Amino acid sequence: MNILFAASELTPYAKTGGLGDVLAALPAELRARGHSVAVALPLYRQLRASLAELRRAPLTLTVELGGRALSAPVWQGTTRDGVTLFAIERDEFFDRGQLYGTADGDYFDNAARFIFYSRAVVALALTLEPRPQIIHANDWQAALIPALVRAGRLPFKTALTVHNLAYQGMFPAAEFALTGLPGFYLKPHALEYYGRMNLLKGGILLADALTTVSAGYAREILTEPYGCGLDGALRTRGGALTGILNGIDTELWNPATDPLLAAPYDARRVTAGKRRNKLALLEELGLPLTLAERPLLAVISRLVEQKGIALILRALPLLVERGAGLVVLGAGEAAYEAELRDWARRCPRQVSVSVGFDERLAHRIEAAADIFLMPSRFEPCGLNQLYSMRYGTVPVVRKVGGLADSVADGETGFTFSDYTAEEFLRVIVSALEWYPKAKKWKALRLAGMRQDFSWSRRVPEYEKIYAQLTGTA
Ligand code: ADP
Ligand code: GLC
Image 1 (cartoon, rainbow, N blue to C red):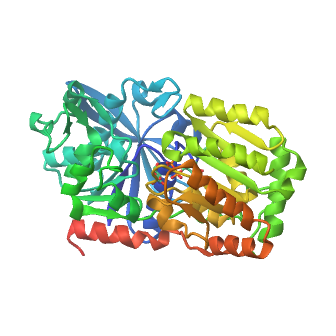
Image 2 (image 1 turned 180 degrees about the vertical axis):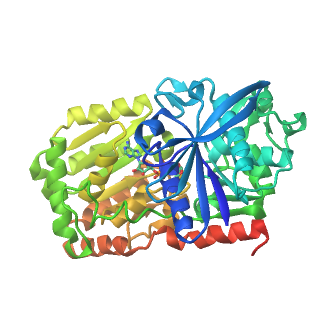
Image 3 (image 1 turned 135 degrees about the vertical axis):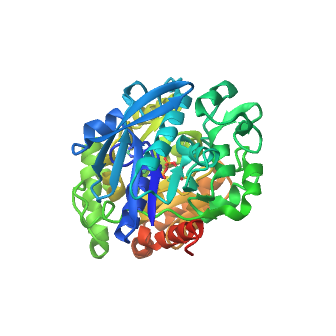
């Protein structure tokens, strides 16, 4: 199979969340199984800076955008897993400090940026030899692609994966002119949404195949409470929507070989190994080493509503009162950042808050912590609970979306259903009560470590969809 992935993130070069991790791992796994796979990204400043072997390809696309013909030189490289990477250059759009916006909000021209990108991917696909059979678009930034392929009657099948329905690429209708599509695509059967242009909606309605990142989320988003206003559109595609739980990169996230850890460990040495990492982390973060005797809880997250940060703030008094430690790594909404920092200032011997994005620290926290908190309001898949289990860190999660599909209450972690502080506190208390029972706790840890979350288990499900699309099933 020949597949071109279109996405706006790729770990470790350009990442704000799990999307980048998926794009770094799924195409690589498909390639390992013999498929021909490439990924097309905008040439962000971050990509140019971090991917040394990226070279200008002998190809410059011309992309029409709102009546202007813009040139877009293509760069080519190979990811560390051998996947071909195409990066589309247009510095006026992509040579910026961030991928999508700053603390002050989204970039004002995100419609132009990602419509341009989507049009460029389609133009690129038409030049490739052999030609990709499938363009696999991800999230709203690439969701215009199915409409472009349909409108142009182009010889590609399209798949769209929704990683998060809450981000839709919704813009004023006036921006529709940038798409170059015939006017009837700005209608409710395609991109129109209550008088505006909704790129994700267009992708949902027009992609040949539609997937999301867990079976649980695939069911939830057909309902009003989780549908973010698109449950109606999704229901019309019911039959075409498949939920496939994300895998993880088990080499990058392997506690036995992780070069970022103070002391790598495997399941046979989990207790001693994690203790050494815990001491190292406490020291690194300036927390007292005596805290090593207490349970250490962790949060690594975008600091946004989705992630249940409000519940974490509500749980903090209890954690402090019980003498536990809490380590937070995250960035996002200013109010959450400020409130968390305030806790660290008030309780410097128990609470550490690092605001920012730090891959190294994320690995070290996963290795050091005893308990990982993820009380999400909704969670399409969630990767941190998977990384946690792999590192012998027991997840406490809300039973929703991919969290419900991956954490088994009392076996590999702790779960709660209602999004309330009371429920969250109740499960935290049970976790804290299990923690001193060394044998039981170790059993929980080991059960998590034994789970197989590798992509090799998931890829056949994607292969099946590709085969259906190309009529080779
Ligand atoms: P989402 O994509 O919704 O943010 P996921 O759980 O799927 O949630 O993926 C989050 C990814 O981003 C994980 O790889 C996690 O380790 C990483 N991450 C989130 N915040 C930070 C941060 N502040 N520093 C480092 N890594 C982070
Ligand atoms: C999104 C979701 C997250 C998922 C990730 C990768 O960012 O919020 O749950 O794991 O995409 O699919």
